[in-house]
Image (tube, rainbow, N blue to C red):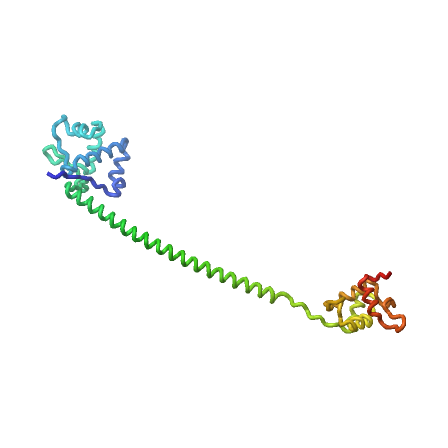
Length: 265
C-alpha cells in the first residue's frame, strides 16, 4: 500500500484571528496556542478527529500524554476551545476540530513523486529561461557598450567643435590692432599741451615724415609714445639736432640723440 503524506494548511492571517489572539492574551496563552496546534496535527490523519482510546482515566489526561503537555494546561485549552466552537464532541469518545478539517491536505507517495518531478522540470525550464535572458542581457550589454562608444565619440567631436568655436570667438573678440594713422600737427600740438611739455609739434611731424614714420627700423605703432620719448629725453625746441649751417633738422643727429637718451659725448 502506497504511503500517504498529510499536512496542515494554516491561513496567512491565522494568528490574527480574533479567537487565536484572545487565546494568546490569556495568562500562559502561548502555551495553549501551541497545544491547539499540536491537537490539529494529531487529528490530520483522521480527518480532523481525535479519539479517546481509554489509555488514561479522562480524555484530557490521555491527550496530555499524547501531546507531552501538562494536564492542567491541556484542560484550560480544551475549555477555551469548547467555548469558541473550535472543538466538538461527536459522541463515542470522538472529538472534532473543525478548523483542522478545513486545513488538511494529503497525497500518496506516487503523487508526491509526480509533484516533485514536475517541480524539478519547472525549475529546469526556469533555468533555461534565465539562461536565455542572461544571453539577451549580455547582448543588450554589448549593444549598450557599443552605443556608449558611439556616444563617447560623438561627445569628443562635439567637444572639439566647441573648442574650435571658442577659439574663433576669442580671436573675434580680441581687439584688432589699430592700423597706425599718422597724426596732424594740430593733434600733436593738442597732445603736447595736454601733457604740458615743450616738444615742437612741427619739428616732430617733420622728423617722422622725413623718415617714413619709423622708430629705428620699425614702423611706428604709437605716435603719442614717441611724443613721451621726446619729452623724457628733453628734446624739444632746443637746437641739439638742428644743423648749424642750414638751420634745418639734422635727422642723423636726432636719431642718435633719441637712442642715447639725450646724452652726447
